[in-house]
Length: 367
Ligand code: IPM
Ligand code: MN
Image 1 (cartoon, helix red, strand yellow):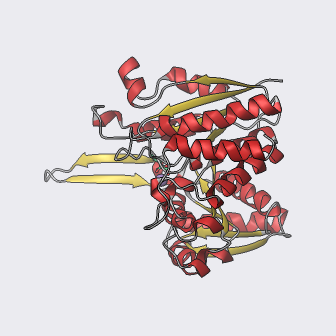
Image 2: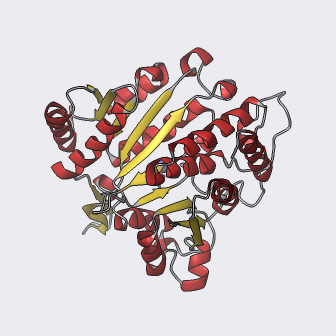
């Protein structure tokens, strides 16, 4: 059976890290006979040059048809007119694919404890799964826009909006994930101030009582979560939150792992009648225009996104675990890209050099 995997390398360091992710997919294809059919589509600067739009309908159609999408990054300061805002293109792609659950795992690797900005005793052993709602909330709510008032001054409006169904479906994913982990969910919202926060808390409480009494549920205010994640991140297992809070708090949590260059993600939609969920896998780090084209970006987030793809789209848990082990062993063996470099450490590797180190460990592990 063949599975279609669509690569969208995108902008900035996207193409560089995706080239290494692609080597890993190709290796799994060869050694495991995984039967992945790989195709590629454009988005961002290249797409704009070719079609006049940063995200063409063709790319959206291809993404919807694929069994899984591996996405690099979009964004940068190049010549694309600002009004074509590429970031909104990514939001549109997520929305059109119906990707509402964004899984952002944060792990502290023992080998990287000297790269984290937290104290070693705080970061050691952290294994947190942030589940971010991805296709609603203030990034999509209407009305939105900037208008000029009669006095000539401008006024901007964004709308935070959630329906019960939108909260319930993402919370259900969080509870299911917790069952495969340490059995704890923290539901994060500003339920003391925001109406959407109140509804969030009510819906999660009701779902918990009705379907997941075996999972330990805790409600945490978003501001308090921001503090707790720095004070004692090990207290959390799965944390579910809305689009905006998930965006902010996953970036902050990334530092526990040593670098934003370490964080993969999976974005999942509703299963069709064959049980297939629309899925897109992407590193959390974004396009990093300041280091693009230099060959020094960390490909680990992209490679760990491949592992997430094998786990969540293709039920290849053993192969996913093997890739994660290969990454851990490469780090233990001293492989570091510049973002992980600490004063006095070994010379940092290039993007391809880190890819080589991980592929060598995969081979040693039998893949
Ligand atoms: C992310 C990014 C995106 C977001 C941007 C680039 C649209 O920050 O994936 O976290 O806000 O979701
Ligand atoms: Mn972000």
